[in-house]
Image 1: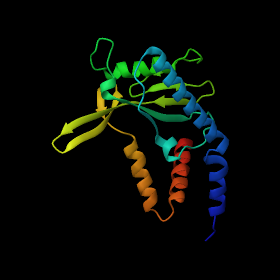
Image 2 (image 1 turned 90 degrees about the vertical axis):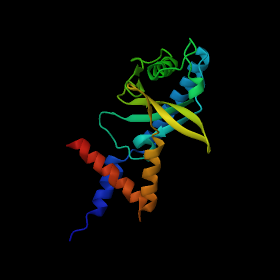
Image 3 (image 1 turned 45 degrees about the vertical axis):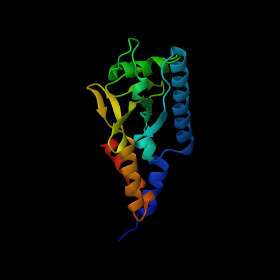
Image 4 (image 1 turned 135 degrees about the horizontal axis):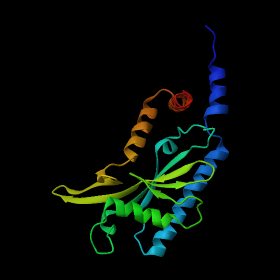
Length: 198
């Protein structure tokens, strides 16, 4: 049987995986949006995020090259539930929370203004890629056994119990259980690239 593993690996390394320069550029865009958001929230007198969490293929390192630069960077922004209060003192709706993040990240320098989407705020870049900022709140509940913490996503249907870290943790657990976790990531990238091509 003919061994074509070197050819497949070369294709992966040259045409599928993102080069380090593009990975660094994506990280820079992510960090710029985090800084822009913090400054915008502070300027508007809005609550500070408690954390940012990278998500999706960006977090799992399974992004693939795209000829149209249609890259999607997911970077969740997390707030304390008790901090998300509207101007009238009521609990912020999921739409109000997404609008708050959109307004804060929009510093007027984008050619296309950031938009509120059904489950995130999308920041567009002229070259084709975008950054999605899903908005979460941390909910702490007192129980007889102590505090229980869960997270909720600001979705179009309201606050929905969700935390993308669960998917990233599951993926890392599966990689750790494999004989070759790096190979699993390469296969994921190759399959994604193939799916984009058909």
